[in-house]
Length: 389
Ligand SMILES: Nc1nc2c(ncn2[C@@H]2O[C@H](COP(=O)(O)OP(=O)(O)OP(=O)(O)O)[C@@H](O)[C@H]2O)c(=O)[nH]1
Ligand SMILES: [Mg+2]
Image (cartoon, rainbow, N blue to C red; front, side):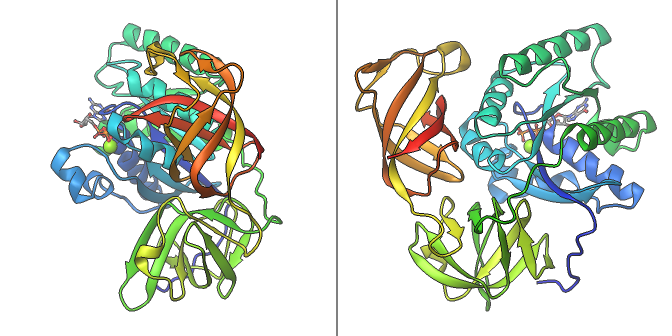
């Protein structure tokens, strides 16, 4: 672990790029780091270091979620570059669950595509309240066509409750900005200004007991097991006792880092790595939750309001009934659950229904928590927990 400590000088936010495959999310992410590196408030992260897992290079699509950090004049950001490929939308849900705002990347050449719409729907569901649009590849697009794409994107956002008329839509070229073309580096500056001003600093629940949904688990040779993720609430310090829900382990945090920089204390919103004393690597998984001991009681039964996606939105073509067993994506967890629709008994695509769910295992639940429902690799529903039973 490197030695320069993290110094908190600016408010920290978590943002990310989402959008259809090949619309330019990773190129744009690299371009943002380049523009800010030239300004002196970040380090350039080239495309191939963002799109870096071996599995990805082989298939040429973003599968794992990559994080980079940078600063604007007013803020410090952790930025996650989310995958666009349909098979990996579940990774997108994990990433979006921790975002304060998102940059929706839409190719000005192609317009809205299936994952553009799916990502907007999922973002809404997992609680991303602010979206800024990057109309990418504007270097290659024709202006009238781009105008149409912009209208189409604003309509899509309005349809999902984002107030499409007031959402900033910035025409950019990640590719040309990476090449240093001044017209297009200016477009990236404009995009960052839009993010700085349009995405508000969210309220951080610093006084609540510590909770972090585990996004990834790794081993540091000679030091032990590390879990990473964004702190959902509270504060954690080196030396604090924590419990890992899902693994049923109590342990102590022996190290804390953000982007390779050690810190004494992490707080709600921070994207961190936690070194856990004496926890075997295979005891902890993505989807587990690290929390202050005794602060949450995991459970498996809850009631929820659920929207069943229509076929046009990529959902099912047939109704679901009591006994249906899809996967539930809750925070970073992916758990099977059985649906009970009560007296209604049947829910058709396009319906909003109340259901009781019995999950296959206990997870920390609370009223207001958003989740996605998936089946056979596609999203079929989106809901909010109304009560824990
Ligand atoms: N003309 C032009 N091409 C671009 C621009 N941005 C990206 N591209 C090209 O579009 C293709 C896809 O870019 P990526 O950045 O890999 O797209 P992505 O959205 O990250 O793709 P996935 O991660 O697979 O979903 C590449 O060939 C890029 O060079 C742009 O601003 N202008
Ligand atoms: Mg990518």
